[in-house]
Image (cartoon, rainbow, N blue to C red; front, side, top):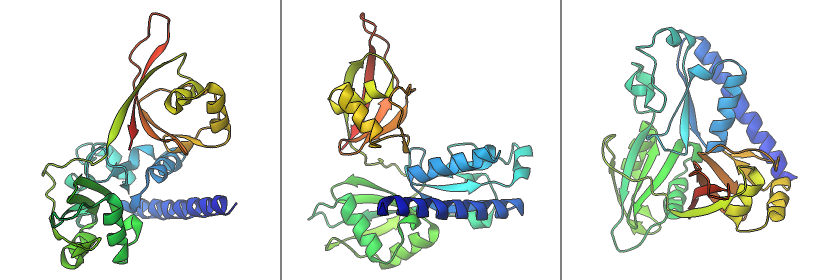
Length: 275
């Protein structure tokens, strides 16, 4: 019950923020959110779509595959100016000549001493320990056991360059990560392959769980399954990959497009499980 109350409060807070963004966009300015979680991004896109504002929305977290992103709500007049309209999946600051957007998404590369392995949890704990809110930070992309790239605002970037000296008792140094500098998103996955009778949610969940369809149905009806970060309660829901699917207690998966059918008419399932 407490979790449901907190979820409702979080949803109300997000909606209030989005309403504020609408008011700003109506004044002819580009409105900008903090970094949003994938679920918040999906909820925000639905919120604006219901208001006929889908084309005014841009999401950017520093790279195309970012999970945590900032939402840009463009003023309506830009829709009539295609040369000024930022393409989807790109940094709006590169197209819009608005000073307020400069450095809206920046990045810092943090490098340890090399004597201790550092995890995502180590970086996040040290950053929050500096008094930062989670929504001031985007993805934390671990590059190797001793290095990570943190996406943040320009203000937070400058703060980290001046302040962050240690991560999990390991001495670190920070520098600006250039926009065109190579990096990896740091996500590790293992491939999952199987065949399923159909693209129904219960069939796919059963394959990903390695269990029966009955167990999959119980997980779905029990609210344990999410598709693209939203609860999925219909066992017969057809799935159209690519999409993200998670089963609480089992893990999170990236479901890839089906690879045709077997001779017996079963679909070849491909997925990646995040580890």
